[in-house]
Amino acid sequence: MNDLPVLTHWIDGAPGTGSSARSAPVYNPATGRVQRLVSLASAADVDTAVASAQAAYPAWRDASLAKRQGVMFNFRELLNARKGELADILTSEHGKVTSDALGEIARGLEVVEFALGLPHLAKGEFSENVSTGVDVYTLRQPLGVVGIISPFNFPAMVPLWFFPIAIAAGNCVVLKPSEKDPSAANWLAALMTEAGLPDGVLNVVHGDKEAVDALLVHPDVQAISFVGSTPIAKYIYETAAQHGKRVQALGGAKNHMLVLPDADLDLAADAAVNAGFGSAGERCMAISVIVAVEPVADELIAKIADRVKRLTVGDGMRGCDMGPLITQAHRDKVAGYIDIAQKDGAEVVIDGRGIEVDGDASGFWLGPTLFDKVSLDSAVYKDEIFGPVLSVLRVASYTDGVAVINASRYGNGTAIFTNDGGAARRFQHEVQVGMVGINVPIPVPVAYHSFGGWKDSLFGDAKAYGPAGINFYTREKAVTARWLDPSHGGINLGFPQNT
Ligand code: NAD
Image (cartoon, rainbow, N blue to C red; front, side, top):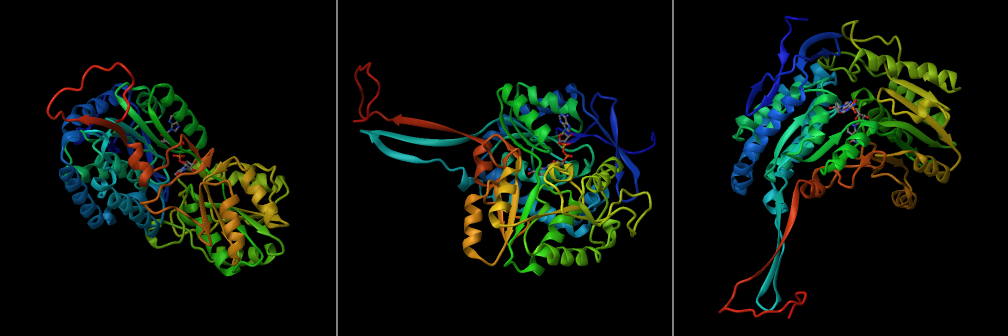
């Protein structure tokens, strides 16, 4: 391992080695081989990154909107021109297929384009003459240094949900990406430098819990944006809030797709396969449970199974439909749910173990897996599996289906498939979930709305990007002003009243 390249932090506009001797392996999941090591930051390394951001902050905060917007515009152009390079990085470290990697980048680019509108979006408000000769207006100002902690499954898109808005708003950033696929973060930071971003405005520290904990308690970090699993999101929310920070912490998910008897079953089957097995099910908006309202289950399952059998699995660079899972340990954990399903009495319609792959035998492979008649008590239903595993639950009515969805601890995304507008309208009103699709299986809001779930899928009250992102990364200041003409207000110790 000693002769492997080592990915280091990105501090002050350049690679920085840091003081920690700890590192972690970064695999190519399609070959199972370690392709590089990544440095794992110590608390002292986090300090260095925060100090760099803090030093850059006064000048960046005071840079004109035109200057900040100019950098973001250059970044947008560079990213668009060179997205193929980034897609290759994503495929080689995450495993997702090239088309999916390009899709992830496209959704990140949308947020960059949204952030270009910051001069308009962060405008304050003005009320003239609230009292005689007195005006009130509000300003939106940046927070200072903000921390972003991101998960493995979207190594480019999730950082892009946050840092373009944070930076356009005048903040400086320390990004701690997932240590499992860390290279995309350095690539993005180097591109921001190329786009003209001053050194220190965007820093990347790699690491694990030690680096995260250092960010959560750092006195110079004003806010934390986190995306990851639910237990860690809860921990992040509580710890950062206890240390006085503004926090948004997006957690895990178990997304249900309700299929009513009047649905177009071919459309529903296509949607279930795309949303269940895209990115090998490693998406927070993946559909992992089909709630089939009888009598559609048999026909729907047959259509899904027919499509699943035609999916190709292999190295993401080779034009397959689905790539490997992120690590061997995760692959084994997900495969373990097939035994659990059998033990708990579910029917294994398709078993993804032993699938033929177009790739290296040592890759972290698991084929698409389909369960029927899954019980609500089974860990297969209750756990976020985060792999290419789709479970079907059969229910007798729309009401039973909604009750199942609303009883879930998660509330990230959900979808209904129906041709009945009244049922769809009732569903959007009744369902206890933050993002709802109507005949759309992965309802990720566009960049000018905001992204986030309910219940254990989001801790804090701030969603990501869109108007919520602008609010999160700025704080409002209200100014009450009187310009004396000609001169004196007189003494009055009573509470100010408007006259
Ligand atoms: P994870 O929670 O294991 O890791 C997320 C981040 O937290 C990483 O940067 C990691 O280094 C750090 N981390 C891990 N353990 C930690 C600990 N004990 N203390 C402090 N920091 C720690 O998540 P993951 O496996 O990288 O990503 C998959 C998860 O993310 C899934 O649960 C998925 O649903 C969720 N996710 C949610 C959304 C959303 O928008 N709600 C989006 C993408 C992913």
